[in-house]
Image 1 (cartoon, one colour):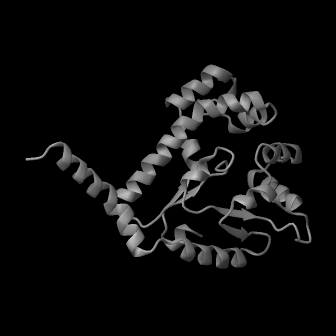
Image 2 (cartoon, rainbow, N blue to C red):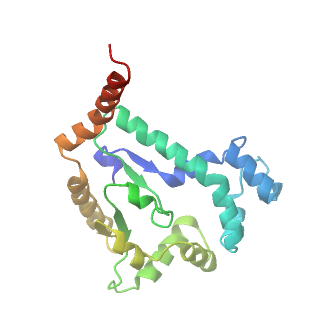
Image 3 (cartoon, rainbow, N blue to C red):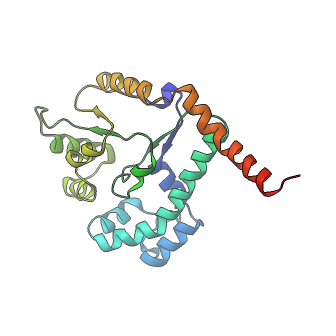
Length: 211
């Protein structure tokens, strides 16, 4: 929905898949810690098997995070710098563990997409059912993945904007369009953020190296 609005979107899950491709540093570290037993015949990670391991054992999940997170966030920062360089007015970062990792402190607006607890089906049950269907997971595996994240009812306290995803997709998209209009920076703010760093650098250079 965000991409259809022609707004740059950085999908952290997609980035996470890219940094663990065979031969990359994160991939090598994962194999070192978890052995080649977590690889498929073609040498790529068996994501389902690795998921079963890390979501059942928090200590192993922390090991995986240490292997991948530095490379994930480095890639995200490169993308953000690129969008700034080409003059985009904003970019949206889709990061499931944004609040858990403390990275929400560095963003201008926080949007939480959640299921309303007043929905006829409980928000947790709705979230569980959708997760099982989307990723083809058993109920136990889906619950383990949900347990690894902060509950949505707690995340909403950090939100500047909330999108209720309990109903039909058309209603969700209506909210997405509305929120994207609200978070779009004003022209003067965008110009200041885009021109500010080069101008500041120029002033520093002139101060350090006067004619």
